[in-house]
Image 1 (cartoon, rainbow, N blue to C red):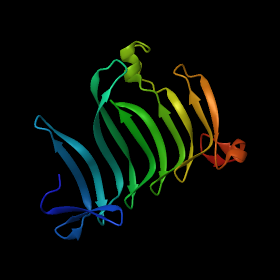
Image 2 (cartoon, one colour):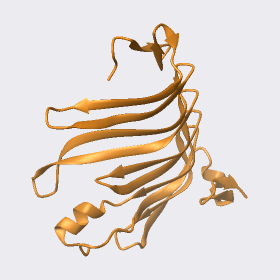
Image 3 (spheres, rainbow, N blue to C red):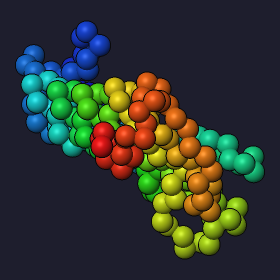
Length: 185
């Protein structure tokens, strides 16, 4: 919660924080109070008014599942900021289970990425046993400056490869791209 002594600002597209007129440095926690309980929405730290270091971001969404039931999907992201930009590996969780891992460099997707099937939905429908918690890869590939590059692999729910897609701009050189590390061999 931003109090009267704190002031959030957006300048030149960058989000920042001041405290008593100075650029804020230190720990930060933002809560949402929905009347029944308080919940952490954001948690991290600022350095000279910019997000810096490890951050956690929570976002609840109402969704309609395959059976027409409305449910709240708790989404949670964890990763690092450097100078107000996502940097390093960011993990996304939905309903407490890993749904994706994406590498960032200076605010853009750069490096390996993996996205996972929703085990909660599949356990509910009976496609998975109730105790199944291991993430199942839905797709994986590489990003370069926010664009998907090289070969992207897409998998069936049983883990078998469904198809491979060759993405521009490295379409001609994709065989030289290591999918695991997103480096040229």
